[in-house]
Amino acid sequence: MDLKALKTLKPAEYAEAADGYRAVSDAADAAAERIGKQITTAMDAANEGKAADAAQKHLKKLAENFHYTQLECGLVSGSLNGFSAEIASPRRRLIEALDDAAALGYPVSPAGDVTFPAGGENKATGDEIPGGTAVGNNGMLGPGNRGLYGPGPNGLYSPGAEADGIDIHYGNPHHTRAQDIADRIAHALREASEIDERYSEALGKLKAAPGLSVNTKTWADVASDMDAVSSAAREYLQDTVPFDKSPADRKEWWDTLTDEQREEYRIAFPETIGNLDGIPAAVRDEVNRENLHVLIAKLEGQHDETSKAQLEGMRGIQEKLANPSQPPMMLLGIGDDGNGRAIVSYGNPDTSRNVSAYAPGLGTALDGDFADDTVRRAFQTAKGAYKYDHSTASIV
Image (cartoon, rainbow, N blue to C red):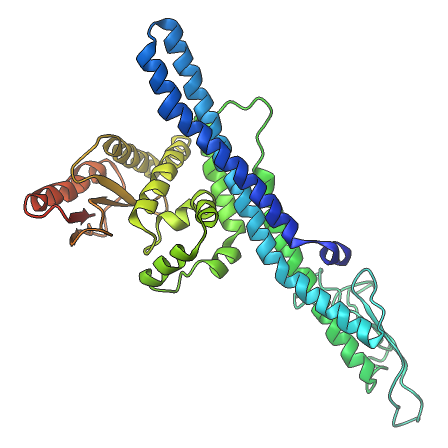
């Protein structure tokens, strides 16, 4: 990211592109839902035989393709919005620095160097102190810092200094102003380059090969894509999601978002939204069911003992979610970090008068035993309480 690119960049255009990808994501979601809830149901009721079975198989594949399109376009949308939001700050600071240079009449080179005129008086000689060029220090101790490193046999770069190390511009008031502007430009370019690299790397992964067949490996790649986008957008999330607030404050924040913004968070950042206290339980359940499918595909491609145990646990939870229960089962959290994590509730804790919570011991892992025995504990607790008051939820 150089000065010209950052100066001419328009963050709003990336936000507009994000809206376009989100529209495609929404359309793909609607198409997948129509296939799953309308077309296949109608065909199943009206047809039977090998031809009908083959048609259902193709429809299922088509629905998976739409589902994949929905998620990937949602990830692109989230990435573009994150980039648009983050890049606006260094660009604003660059424009402010360039405006200050223009107001003072200091030319700025394509590299960000600021030329300043002669000014002030040398107390020893009475001569006017010469002008020169200020090279910005971007604050990093590395070769990319042109204020410290540059041409020369020793790699050091000291603009305007004589061989004896005396700064010939000392006392020139223009020098101080020009150096400040050059430093601000260098800082803005460094930050913009770091943002650009983060999002470029993430967006580079969000590509589908021609003729892609959506299968288990594809869903494992989606999990990797989600991780890449969340990593790239870490600053964006810190700035937009109230992690340091109370659950009540987070609920208030969520309620202020538009439907489009909520959809972006749900698709692009499922691990964040699905595991964040304060987000409505119904939303967390929806997001985590979606993410569970992706996490299972990811774990299926890993063969260490921890991954195998987590895979058994997640499959067990998925099977239970597929079977209706009373009270209904909700997945309030899911993740593969450490030994794995899951938060299961029977009943909606947001709307229940009575809520119980059981936290297993420190040695508990997300495995088959958790999916069977520990989750069953929550179900039995909720079932027992349900006899006395239907407004009950039991969490484990």
